[in-house]
Image (cartoon, rainbow, N blue to C red; front, side, top):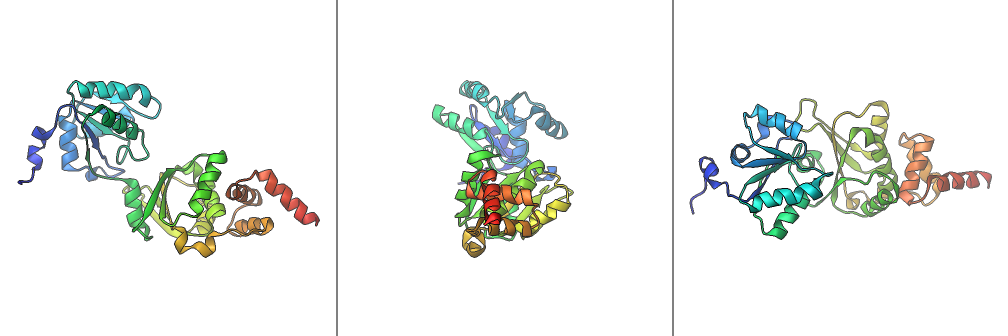
Length: 291
């Protein structure tokens, strides 16, 4: 069977099809020729942020009708996009950067289209998670993508407990303003495992820090986190002896303090790792001091 060439792509765009088009995560040169063709020939483009994607399309000299599709309007906008697809229009779905539907509300639109019998296909390209994994120096044979961890509360504590026994390499996304807290929580729950902290991937200020979680806590105590981060953390099989925190609460808090955490941050991290309130840790320490 002859292979379809890029020159045939314009004729290959099917009416009523949703195209998941991967876009660069930092370097515009990473946009594939096929992605460029699809963006140029579909009837309309659904974007997480029409302003950001509009700037990208402007640089590419592409003018297409756009609709916004994001976390806060997906329930209303999804059926609208599906109806247009059923009427025979073709649509390219893009996110702000990387692959749509990966830690992205695009997964809901794919599910809706599948339920409605609407064809969906992908135009592969950049994905921050896979790029970071490849650069991490950690095992790539088996891995688990966690996306963004729950922000706080019981759900976060329970997720960290689950990850403690995960044998696969872990991939976590994090924003700069939450990086320190996440590193502290990972240290409290998982121990001092190896980690690769990947910042601003494919951009001018790209940085890959291959270290341990404890050393990373100390590193970012002195430095202000900047840019978007992907954390790649080794699985428990490679670090099981280091992953278990001490049963004694005082020893647990002391271990966290040795990594560079302040007393209060160590108490908070120990509480999250154990799934209890920080006051429970604080009161336990007082009782131990009094004994």
